[in-house]
Length: 608
Ligand code: M6R
Image 1 (tube, protein in one colour):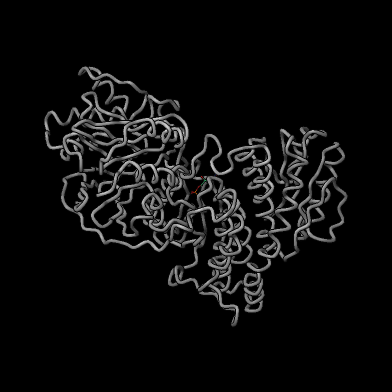
Image 2 (tube, protein in one colour; image 1 turned 90 degrees about the horizontal axis):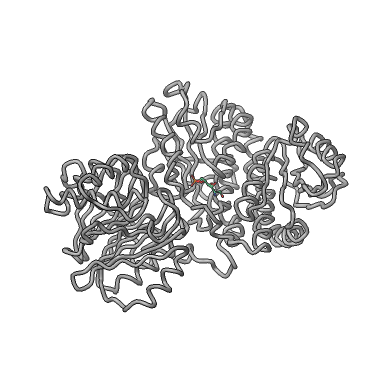
């Protein structure tokens, strides 16, 4: 979590850094701050709350023409959101300052040692401990690079850190360990940031730093070195293909709404080059030459975990691969029965940086199990460390609540199930052709349905926005969607919502139902429809109000019917998913919540 950016070049650096922080705000927005050197003094400005608070403060300070600066946007870990805990943090002498993303696990031990040497601390952060450790190391290693490396060698945990000194006003130092850090190479200017959009208006040329690397940069030079011995590292420069427009709102009120409406495009892009609608063939170059696993373990968090739960049905029924799905934070602390190379671990992560998912990947690799990474962000840690990567190609997802990423993950997983099913000869050529035809028709069908879906979501949100609790019920594929619908509602509108397997309600949760506790039932026209209908009746018998998301012609008598166009399962899920997203979006917006940046959350969860 947290976003960091450093700039050194020929422009006034503070506006570049603040603009970069705006594009990193999805990583946290508890506080923000910048540092730069002017007339031999290190200047730090910090403000609690969103970036606009920092901008207000900067507007009241004298304008600086410094051409090197660094900044930070925070998601609190050590220490409450408060100005004293905001970054940058300066050392006791005020000579050096750092911004940091991650957690220094042995900070207390280091802090105790520094306290015994007379250091004082003004915050509760591990970051202030680290900057003072660097200062302490300078007593024996006057060269700042050497001192920085010596301090980092003592720090255990995760960090992406950027360092400035008043003695070298036009130099940035940075290092990475288990937290993302990307180096951007401009003309007469260089950047260091947690994510590419931070500097995308200036350069598309990037270097992905690896764990255990340290970089020293000026406007016209840079050197990457290994932390352990400062030996040089050579790295190929990569060129990013995104444009900035993809990272802007494009006329929508919120990024979330834009990203929901991008889903037909996401489906098209995800299918391009992978299916051929003319001869109904499927080609997944990423998986060619790899055996179909005997057992699959899907590991992920949040929405990505729901994609995995959804896909299990297809991986088992189409591909015949026994599949388990587990939350990464649970998986990583369990004894595993992974069976070597015939098993496969499939990690799913939009960001490719989720700490628990990355840890699960590393456990599997240590045990010699192949890991397939399903990621959106190109060059992310998971994409680079997996044995093979399958990109979901959703484009940048800016809204903290994940929407189009899930659509792209479900599509990719359906394609994988189809591809393995064909290779295992579990699906006949006719079945494969029929599925490919359905997939091919999906983007246009969704595009046509979205405007009416949005309208209905708006109507229903007004009717139910005052509810304090919600159940989301579904079975089979729709159970995973019910979990996702509930997650979206709670994270955006702060209404308590529980996703439940509808058949499980009678084992306890139904006790909660009363007229003030509505249920959102996923009752699509599939083989489980009669079962779901019975569960709906059970809720109604307890005076529970019901919204039923269903297909035209369904024989249901509920408070609110929401019909979406009928498609055969599992493709109907691609229609139901945006309906759930739109309902949560409209409810949160109606209640005046911050849709793109809900409280207490961050887009990329790089701490455990
Ligand atoms: O980047 P990832 O897919 O690994 O992220 C996983 C979760 O943190 C993420 O899906 C989270 O649950 C979102 N807030 C859901 O909207």
